[in-house]
Amino acid sequence: MTAHTDTPGSVTAVYKVSGMSCGHCEGAVSGELSELPGVSSVKAVASTGEVTVVSAAALDEEAVRAAVDEAGFELVGKG
Image 1 (tube, rainbow, N blue to C red):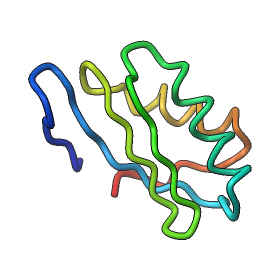
Image 2: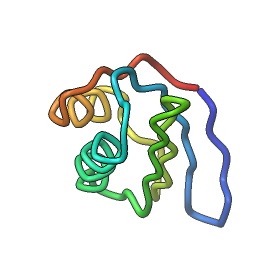
Image 3: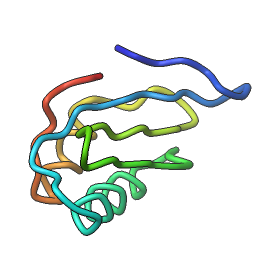
C-alpha cells in the first residue's frame, strides 16, 4: 500500500486503474471515488492509470473497487 499523510488527519493512497483513456474517464472515476465517505480529493490521470485519493482515514479497498467498477473501470491494485 502506498499511503502517507500529507497533513495531520489525512491519508493519501495511489491506486492503479485500467481502462481510462481520456478526460471523461478521469472525471467518471474521480466522481465515483469522491462520493466515498471521508474523501477530500481525487486526482485521476488517464495516461498513467493512476488515481490519487486523499481521505480522512485509510479507505476500504473493496469500497474503492466498487466505486471504480461503478464508473466502468477496473481497479488493478495500489500503485
